[in-house]
Length: 212
Image (cartoon, rainbow, N blue to C red; front, side, top):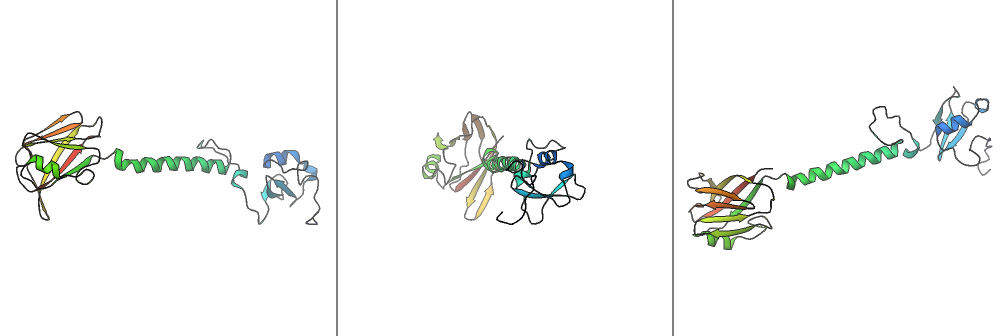
């Protein structure tokens, strides 16, 4: 009445919007159809096509994603409409993003320990700061005068290899394993023992490679 547009009995379904296109087509007799005849379906205005067997959205209407059904021939979604299908995609995208973000920590294989210059292993350890010179949660300790103990938090992961660099100003020299870098590397649970750590008094950067 407010629009001064006469409504026939099939514009609505007993005073309410038709639930969906299929319900409207099933409920409107063929003899009551005409090209351009308006039908309100789930808040969206539709009209009959000229063939009188199909409905299309009337010009200028905004379609609700929840009102658009999908024919999922590839069985890609559990949803039956566009909005629910998009929700499924969003959920999967969020899960993938979380997995990618976690790759930086879960899949990390190389960790660095930096030891300040000192003539003894104990001196190096006492000058190292957690979170700055080595990962937070790890502990460093001197084992005898030449061995270094590194206790990490990587449960179930074993040391694969160790590189030791001698730092001289801006220059870093890669030392030779089992010679000038160290004499041996032992793995015992969460503790890695580096035996005969480089005898130089210069600062050291130690790269620890762990398996996945």
